[in-house]
Image (cartoon, rainbow, N blue to C red; front, side, top):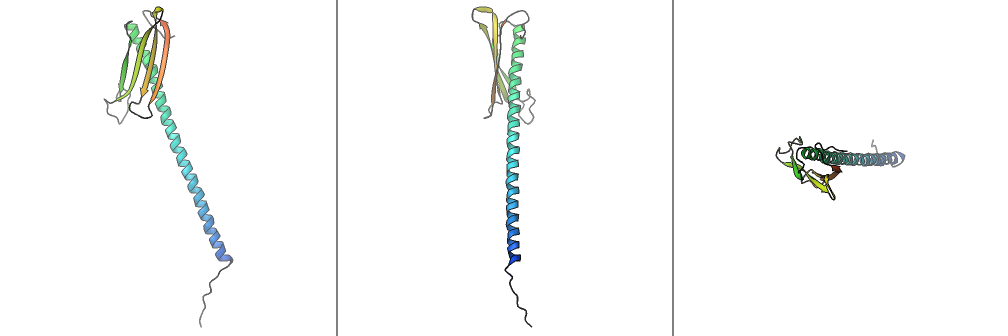
Amino acid sequence: MRHAHVRRCGPCASRRGTVIVMAIVCLSVVALLSVGLVKLAVESRQMQAANVTRLQADWLAESALDRALARLTRDPSYAGESWKLSAEELALAGRSPDQAMAVVEIVVEPVAGQPEHRRVRTQATYPLGDPHAVQTSRQIGPFKMSRRSSRS
């Protein structure tokens, strides 16, 4: 007896094809969602890094004001400086300790028509040599020079 192999073309074959198509569609949706989540995570990390950099520049500019006022207290003729900070001073791991990572320009200037008054401006740039470096400025004054200059 010979058994004839009959090929079935009907509802079963149609269902198998539908299941494969549905599986491919589901995998595509999962892949797209995964790509979107990875992209979101990367953007979030970049925003966090930019925020940390901006905060560091803010604190450097603020610290430079304190530095200038301390110097003015000791030396009323202090006119400012270019304050370079190394990776070691900024406690940055993985960097050459003597590599300059930030610079803060401090300018102390007299106020026109008020010889006893000064204005202090600072501008911090951090990190040096980075295409995403941040510059932040601060200013205080005018204030009257006295034996003990203070921020007010």
